[in-house]
Image (cartoon, rainbow, N blue to C red; front, top):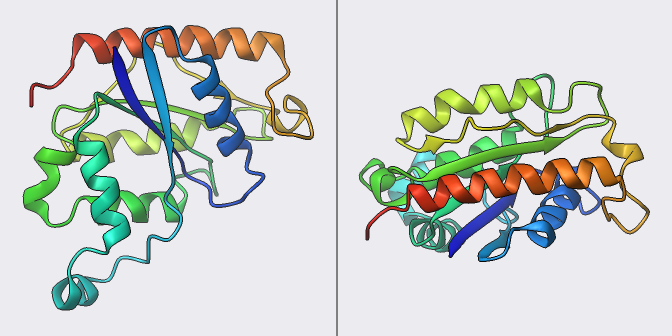
Length: 188
């Protein structure tokens, strides 16, 4: 059984990416769980804060949960053709102190998906994540891309993904990612 944590890189309540994460959790293949976690409450990274008071409890807790799972699913918006600052900030905090990077990210299978009103989905944001993940020693999955463009038309008012083709593509993506996670489970 693959245990995956999914994190949306948006704080907005009605975020397309939060809705996509909820859809992914509901469409996970049999034997796979996707637990939804949040980056809400993570402060801006400040080395002085780290030096004086340590890692914030919200960060330490999320690091511990990620360090204990089999895979990580990043559901990324695309802001100004790149990574959302709030999402990168959360990952930066989780990489502190640097000695914790192998415990939290080392060898961790990571999938990246995203939704956008734009035509090209989150292609540029997903691509921008790759050097970050490599620097952390994570193992990005390249088996199948999932960029959901025109997403504002594919969810209903309650945030459910209603487009059947998009749902089927997401199911296929998740099945491939779950296989990748199973094949690369880290030994603890």
